[in-house]
Length: 502
Image (tube, rainbow, N blue to C red):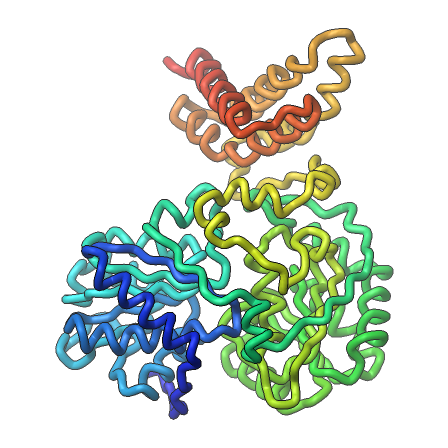
């Protein structure tokens, strides 16, 4: 049994009350099933808002509410807020195999993987659900649950309405987006602390882009664990943040441990935390961090969501990311407002400011929701993309499908200019790329089914090559790129059929 403890109810701010009414009005006006997405910056009180919505929905619709999270900490946080406002609820943890009396609770909170397992065994695991609330809705893992609630209203909440998988945009699963107050408005109204950003120029050559479109952990560890980057981090901390409660975000565990050793050597109060720590150790470290005014906590990934320590005065981005969502999540950890804290500091050691602009900058989230590809393209400059264009790394899990050595031996930009030097048209570079992909698949494919599966898995890499080719010819309209990719895939599949089809 999970102990959710006592919790003091948080009073809704005026803008939060208006949001609750606005969202409920949408569900009143729209005929179920209606999928609504709500955006609000980190620190704006999403849990308080959707808990109030859950309470009012239960009273008005007389149907159960199911809340989905992806971390146990978020489940507990939500349960405490619901209890505090008088909503009797139950957390569906991994230990809960069956629900006895369905009338005992009106509200259930579940982690997505646990609930998916239960629903696969019994689609009536929780009956009479009228509203599903999805916390951190940008995570694509929630999509698997939607099939079980195709006739139910769904409310997704997120700070950044961009899917964690660009191939599965949120607009495909939600009918409408309501964008909440902007970061700058929340600062003006006194609900968020303002960020003072310090940007240090760093050399990121050596970073590789992985299959998910972000920089790989392995290449980040190599870049950020070297002596010069460690020295720059220490210099930035001592120049800007010394003596403040500081949270350092790293891409990899190796980097975070190096940071811990560096700060420990210089006699600073520092601890390291990552996902391999036990719950007990994690609680002890977070308690130490809370109680120590000038504590430095170096971490990897796990504190981007479900972590709330208002006393944080400095956020250090000791990593580079190409994810706007992650950028906002990391900085948002320092934005909590307390009586003696109107501002906090952000130290950027990953050229992230150059990629995304200031955290407080206006963002058209409606545009991001409706046209995610165009939106993301505009956020990352062409110069930034060109800097890393040849650094593409495949996950090892794909090794059975194609020969990595063959793929890595070909560079479409170099091939394009080689074609021009030989006096032939640059478009032959696309044909040579296709031959390279074909050969990499042919070496590993045991039959046509495996070959066609490999083509599916290559889509990100095909996008990557076509994008770099289009830059060489200065022609990159959406329609042209779409045509090029469709033709490329069709011809690649035809070659495989001719070679592998018995």
